[in-house]
Image (cartoon, rainbow, N blue to C red; front, top):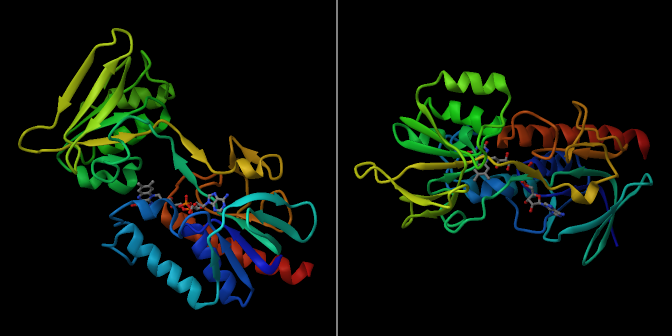
Length: 310
Ligand SMILES: Cc1cc2nc3c(=O)[nH]c(=O)nc-3n(C[C@H](O)[C@H](O)[C@H](O)COP(=O)(O)OP(=O)(O)OC[C@H]3O[C@@H](n4cnc5c(N)ncnc54)[C@H](O)[C@@H]3O)c2cc1C
């Protein structure tokens, strides 16, 4: 068994920032993650919207965050958390390997976009396939873009993408869009947006970059391959078919809304001594900058909590 002041579950941007702030406050700090540090951003080759770091790669930015957290004394252990017990003032966190006891816990296990699951999607992610318009829209300036999905985020992100792309085609599996009427009305006034309904993408093709997609009409079963404009050579495929918070472990333990953890502005969850930071929170903007801000706030609040409680 190991003891510490602050135990952070997840070492993405939120967890790393939380570790930096907790360790700098001289709290003994352990970060647990089932993978190497980094989270979602480690999977993208370019991040241009993190203030002060205009031209970095995801792994490059994470390397610096990780080094900074370690420099202040935070310890990283590569173990996946499989069970937690938040019922007493000392929290119990279990991995397959060990049991940890902590005075405060920061949950920072993130969220991930739902995948289509078709051939080509994984290998071409970051090479034309994206799940984040705020992050990647400008890479498709004056190019064509296909948006998969028909809900609020698909239509809203589709409208946002028209600021960059020369044309945006929304592909939805249903015979209509399911976004709110007010959003649909706005989209209909945008003459850069076209629609392909009753259809889904069954394959994304390309040699190192997206070059074509195969679309299947779910009513007629007919398949059509759409190729990139010859001069442009590529187009964007933005997938917005939902987002999944990684919070199953905490179900029934802390208050949630649709699987997202509810916190106050100081990152307190419904359980004293348990804080949450990053993409798994109920919030409107899921980005590195908001995840790191959450992590910092969570640790400062945890520090005050420990001071009063122990
Ligand atoms: C392809 C892509 C590109 C993006 N580009 C940008 C961009 O350009 N700019 C930007 O600001 N944002 C971007 N984002 C969004 C950004 O990556 C997220 O907002 C950010 O990573 C959220 O950080 P987080 O720490 O909350 O969660 P995550 O990054 O999801 O990290 C969560 C961590 O928790 C770990 N974990 C989960 N469950 C457990 C468990 N049971 N035990 C231990 N560890 C666990 C995971 O392994 C993971 O490392 C992008 C996202 C993607 C997918």
